[in-house]
Length: 385
Image (cartoon, rainbow, N blue to C red; front, side, top):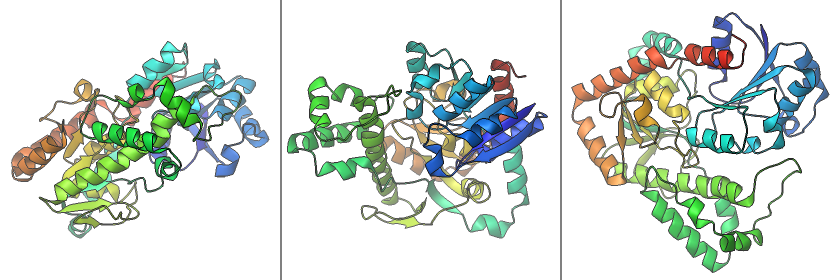
């Protein structure tokens, strides 16, 4: 079977392609400039679609759905972001779609909307690729990434909340500042939905320039919760947690730039996802994960990448974690910032236990959560197995 891979700059794309090819399928990539991806119709895309049996993309693109619907072929999308705002679109109901969402909360929301084209599918890791890479790495290569505590990820320097802040009336500033602080140390529950009352949304509508096309199903509340509050919350949480850890331990941050609010955190620059990031995960004693609150219940790609590389993972609690991993056996989760610091201190001083948990996490992912297994499930659901 021939798949057209609608390609863009997303981390796990090559692992998905490799899994499709290992399953015996032909994969042809098609990539457009970012400006072209925003356009709803594309003659070149429609021509390419006619020459394949199905289209696959990481995340969902309405224009691809329309092209597949017109050509009479199936469109498979597997999300890595949540909420997937592009799914709040009339095209999500196209019968050609098979959209796999890694966040069960989001999956349930779309099912309640009547979107029978949406399915639940957690993310994965290619442990075979990671094992080959890390087994071939020299001690010198691994040593350069040696850390007590490390975090690989962004700090959301450019976020819409900061751009909007000075335009908001004082009452809204205080209201949302209080909401962000209340959410900061609360895990497993999202309070932003309750904060956006009818009155608050009415005031926001006078400040936020909210526009959408005629086929969009999104609204101001959804957009503000995710792209404004969600990203600002991620910035606050990551800086706060890293600073608290850095008061007690050496902390390395792998990202593209520093932030004036960071204290005693060592900036290590960016690392290549395919080749260097796994070495960070394997070489760090404790790998941190701070899940952006936009992901309401699911497990972000970073969790699978750390465990797949054989790294020890300390992560915030997510509702779906107990369904896949046992706390204290295959990973460790925390339920408050104080709890995070206590557990980091404990596992930094208990080497054998930490190493055993990391190995157990790797083995669990290798046995049950490979891309090969996920792709097999996806194709079977889509009737393409």
